[in-house]
Image (tube, rainbow, N blue to C red; front, top):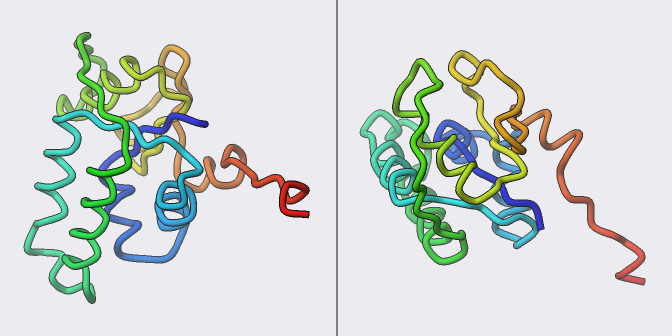
Length: 146
């Protein structure tokens, strides 16, 4: 199963619109087709960002966020990164690299191309939700259903 680290901006997008982030979270993670990897730091950021008052303008955002966070707590794989990196201009995003390194992630999925300016980090591929969905998502083997 693919190990995936999902940047917070992708979680926000998944709750606001039905596009590639939504598909990744609800059709792959919720359906147990990928292994979502998180750290204590990343979980804290998810909670902090998804509770920001500015999201009140989106219908049922907080109810959806609460449900998604409960699924993440229950179903994701938890890691405790030991190595520190200082490679990104937004220092807070270095925790994404640290987590990816610790769990040997296959992919980092982010909408933040301003800070993630390189396409690989060690063995991890860094890409947008669209690129991941089109080129790398796990495809169900329909012959197993026959």
